[in-house]
Length: 190
Image (cartoon, rainbow, N blue to C red; front, top):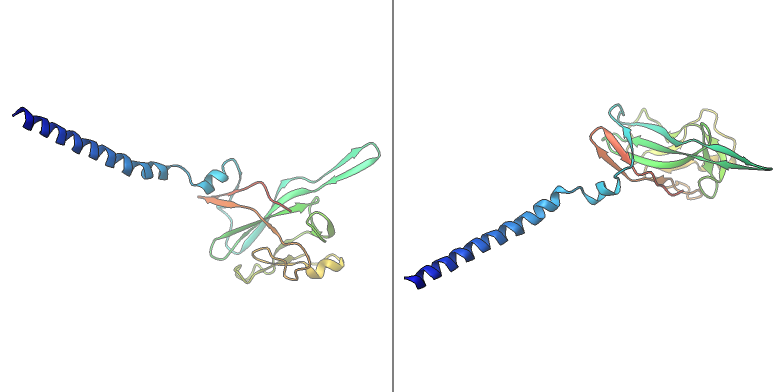
């Protein structure tokens, strides 16, 4: 009888151990899924923009750093500001590009962003009366466009590629939508 009892206990312990191992194996992926995604982790502490009143087929230039003039002795140094061009398409998707700014304008690029050849006060989709989608062109919408000869190349596709290939592309920034807030990575290359 004791041998049978020993076998029963051993079998009971084996069943309990197998059950506990199964629970642990099932719990590991579940617990791992509770932590934020790698993309969300990458945007922790980033700047946020309220998008609750951002209509489809619209855009805004959001300034994040003012331009400034620095005088030291006889020298003067110009520091461009930084802005985000935030575009909301027809289906609600957001596209964000980082841009240098000078006061109220965007110094339009020559070889690189920041090395400017004229200024634009209204850079965005060509016609916001129509649908913003993959065929949309981003351009300078100023009524009196700058007379810079490079102005004929100031056209980009909605994914930021310069249409002519003569000027640099727009610099996209990473974003993540959290309800009515667009979290934007503060870094962008220019």
